[in-house]
Length: 341
Image (cartoon, rainbow, N blue to C red; front, side, top):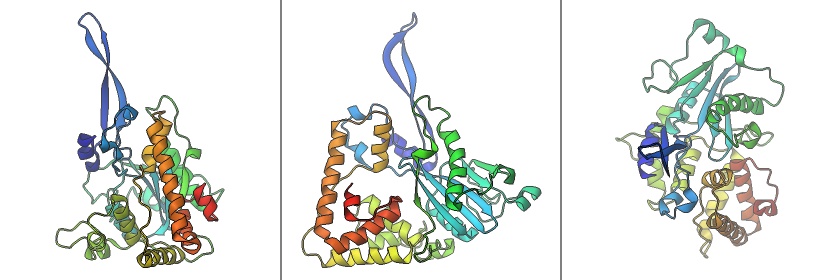
């Protein structure tokens, strides 16, 4: 896994073969078989993982999303598909500058799908300024251009329509080598969308602004997240803070975050701690029938910590936490009981 962790962040996909222990032929050659394909979108090697007690498998390996960019009449729509969590995020009505900032901070996996509008398709061009997609970028990324004729009519909610369109293309790539238990569109859930009736979805920062405040990689400017959070803060906490600073949540979610932070600062008693496995790893283990008693023990321990945390926060703070969890997961949570379920 340590070798893979050096390759996948650089954008490489790795085909892994294992020896079966059986011998074949007169020369008694070891028999080998394709055990897994590890990629930036699925960076954790899962084969026979349940038999390994190596602590490195408890680490969180960042999974790059598959990304589809749609050039529509109302602006650009970006659809991110996170295969590890079986989750989809949809960002609508973005400018080129906002897309540039988002993609530079969250590099996608290959391939990237770009739906041209009719004018771009007729001219055979792509607008400049979009990282990994425009011709003025030389990252060597695989880009699949889609024509307007590939776009089905909008027969449902626009967000779900964009999610369904991109998912169909992503699933063709994911299920290419999947002989059993292939993923289907219903396996994925929408975790972020344009809020309805409660405030307005804020826009991501422009890339130049993000660079100047230390949210994009620049050796001359200190990292904002590293300056705000403790060096010992979990990697997941740093990623969440980085995401919220780059793309601020709606006002009602921001208010809930502010309330939780203030409540924790004023709390005299220590909150329960946990070392939960990443949900993406758990989902992969369950799908590949690799989950052992240890895995289910980890799930049980996480649930216990969740109940203890909700009890420690109190009813009002727990309700604010509920809003944040509902926004991040896309689950229809309405009360603290549903959070525990």
